[in-house]
Image (cartoon, rainbow, N blue to C red; front, side, top):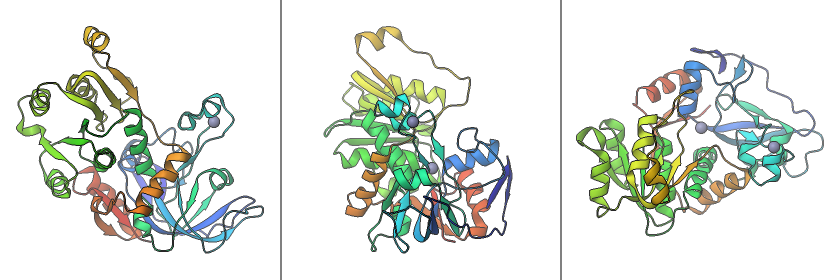
Length: 338
Ligand SMILES: [Zn+2]
Ligand SMILES: [Zn+2]
């Protein structure tokens, strides 16, 4: 599936790529749809897709069918999960141990295809071998799960804390699952409908229906003995919800801005509370090679089972329909099996 610009996704027959030096070709076993793809299809993506046309999709796992010259640690027949980016390792943020903020992050697309060529830098830094028994559909969660791990890490979530997640899409759910795995109490704020019902059924945490609430922040305070949450994470990318997230934490609380808002937007911040209650306001962006590895470990060990977030399975030619369903809130994640 090739992205030719906003609204223009085409099915094309392309030759199976041949690996250059340091590269690896993967036969895709499983790809997952993502809200980012929905957004990108609507309006393009200056960072993830700097040039068009390009192959599309970024969450995947598969089996190596060919390796390029100089590749030592990966062999034909290996099963791999791969991140959708690789940091340079040399810029100031990389050297400071924050590779998610790399000044030269190399993005990789092409999950919605039968084969994908992984560039040398990605092969060197951000692929993880899988055990033969791990279903590819689970391994394909490595990328979004690593993002969720970063968000929960930023919030320094600890056992026994109350974590409120705003947004009940796949990433809101993954954030809730990671926080629950850390033995936190999880509240998920969503909007009534098919998806919230489904999320409720998954038992990730207590669900709060914002459409049935006169005051979401007051309800969260009621549910936390009047004190407010220890950690609030926004996974909606809406400025008004960022403000709710700040209002929802108690003294000493942490607020994680996980969902990216539209360019040019801003929020109102109560300075007095922020200072005297020592609120920690934290951005969270993307993932790191270490967290991609940890994400694979979590699904390999069964400590986190993301299967319930896959609401539909479809073939490659149905990607467009899958993304339309995501856009309408009629799907959580769609598993694409080429
Ligand atoms: Zn994604
Ligand atoms: Zn870098």
